[in-house]
Image 1 (cartoon, one colour):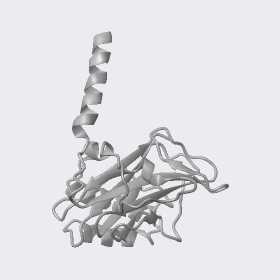
Image 2 (cartoon, one colour; image 1 turned 120 degrees about the horizontal axis):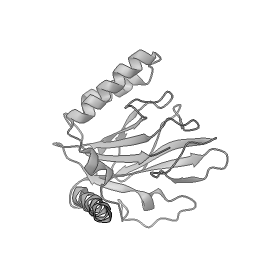
Image 3 (spheres, helix red, strand yellow; image 1 turned 90 degrees about the horizontal axis):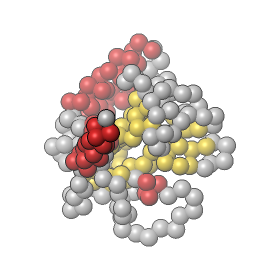
Image 4 (tube, one colour; image 1 turned 180 degrees about the horizontal axis):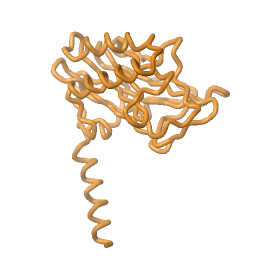
Length: 216
């Protein structure tokens, strides 16, 4: 029995290494960190696998990239659904400038447990064949009030993400970012999201994908 557990542990560890995507810093790449903010005092920490919902908490996403691109951020709850009040967002990301999501008036409040959640972050090169349909769908989802319509739209979004050939296992184990995108020193007070960020290359042929899970 013990050798089976050991073998399983070795397999899991080797799988994480095998599926970790090496970052090529000579090619365009995007970087992201998902944070959990306490609205009462403004404290923020990185979303982790054991993070849980709580009073006054909300989820935010920090993004930047070495080259101009577009990005999707979508939060999926248990059963592959978008929780009420968590509309996905699709934004333009300027080169070497931070983007904070969600954009107002949206707020991803995380006060009630929705079960396990996954935050998907996808980076698309400008003009990517995969991005246009996703951008249009996400725009339509912002004003959706019907639960049935929202369910259909979420299923479609998951279909489009799958069509973009996102490797879920690789996206969960993408390389951790270790340097500034812009290569500049920064004076930071409070939470420094770059210390917890992960990074992934993207191109016109294939989007870069990152997935941040939380147990809740």
